[in-house]
Length: 238
Image (tube, rainbow, N blue to C red):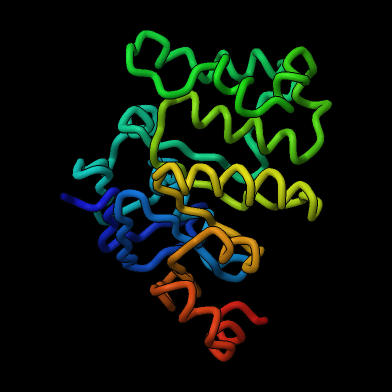
């Protein structure tokens, strides 16, 4: 079986600045991988490049065995992969319910839908309580819940999350990130979690991928990375 994600020789950047250099990365089905690195290391660029959102990309990106190099983002998404972008990416002027129903539009004719708005409300009662509220009035944790719910409604089983804990309180991180993503991991979803919060990411991920100046500096088990303080200091500044 091919890997869920296979990246080879990936170069990417923006505004004339090269950020990723000949990157090679693979993820297997059902893996949860923490993508770590300092600010500017290339984490967000990798996340968006996977969806064809970077204007300068060369190399090969394959998702579920399909070469998606050069594909538009909407076509990539229909392979069952979703991006939860940095900053949540919800429509602040729409209600919670409107955000969810928009996310479900393209998949609503599928007979084998794993997620519906009704299941979202059953599984995430906090969103059910806020369904008529403007998304702009939600707390940071609630907006992140909504962003994850939108990704699930596309019926994706491979979810890429860019800085999901950014700006959240410790309680929101515990409830939303650890709680929600932990359940998805245990259900067999494939997760790539780009994070600055190393402690949080390592609670979820069995494998760590560290970027440093646009190159892979470490790729291995979380237990090995946690035990190597020199590696953490050298590439994360901890």
